Length: 233
Image (cartoon, rainbow, N blue to C red):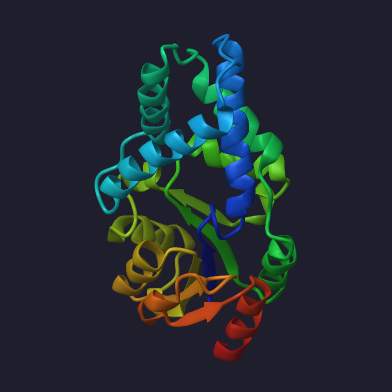
């Protein structure tokens, strides 16, 4: 093994923390719109539904700015309830991600252990560049990574091969000597395997059991990735 790459949301940061972040985005939007009479949790659920549908349609397709997708999802909800999305919505989003994002408990320990083994440790994520940089810096882990490759850099969303190929080019490693860790069997495992990487699915609660066959390894916590790597070296 020469390198390990990680997905970001749901892999290094928890989905629970992401939910809290998005709830607070909606709360702040309603505050600035003067509509705190509305149930922010209900609107959050509608916002999540809108954005989820839009992102599923983007899988494997050419990159469009995530900020534009998020703004459009919020605009659709706002239109139903008769208020306007603040012009600084994206700044609100970045601020709330920085404030409420939550790493998995063993994330930093795992990254450092892999680096101690002499491996290139990077990120491959469907993300806008300003989002991932701001979020990683807020979490205090930006400098731990040797490379960060986004869908904005690659011009495509996972599972398209380009994000994975670009990450390999930047790291200067062969796909057969790389492990990719993600939480989405279809986008992460399939995308990584299609370019020749080994894939690891992080599935803490066993919720994706029916799709485990898409992945080479399945772990319930990040620390197990270190043991897999040691077994492959």
